[in-house]
Length: 243
Image (cartoon, rainbow, N blue to C red; front, side):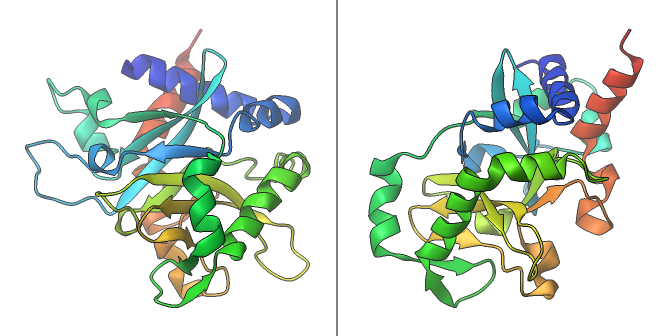
């Protein structure tokens, strides 16, 4: 997919996420997307063997479809976008929103366990299923609430690369987790692979802030500083200068 089409799709989601009906319709097109780990962690031969630490998963809308544009944090930078002669779109992996495949996930859901990011403590897989079901059941109401907040709906997610295994199938599933007692659920991505099953972010461990999948906005410092999302910046710039 050409870079201009990718930027246009990201701009489109940036507009549609402000509409309750549009965002509900598009987020209803699927509950997960595939992650080709080897492809998304690939970097330019010039900077190999530097290993990316994060993957940015941008939402976009193209030809009526919800898409996810995956790019690692090293390539998603102003310096890499400005390299003469480099096709930066070759480092952007495009995935469509999909629904859960019972044949793929069913056996694990009924027989295995899950774990929190960067934790060796196994937890019941029903915690993952609960969050996934919460998204399925509550997402329309949650969207209605989220678009009225200062940050609005998410534009992208940040995924730690340490939680992405190269030698197995990996998927990211939408979920809703309760951040604190009496607080409305918070959107997240739950990573699933055939080796470890579901990987969950632990909302009770604040020290894991930089080690979990998290949505942006809100932006912050370090990993989630706005300047680290160059694809988003150039897409928004294109929107601002468009006639």
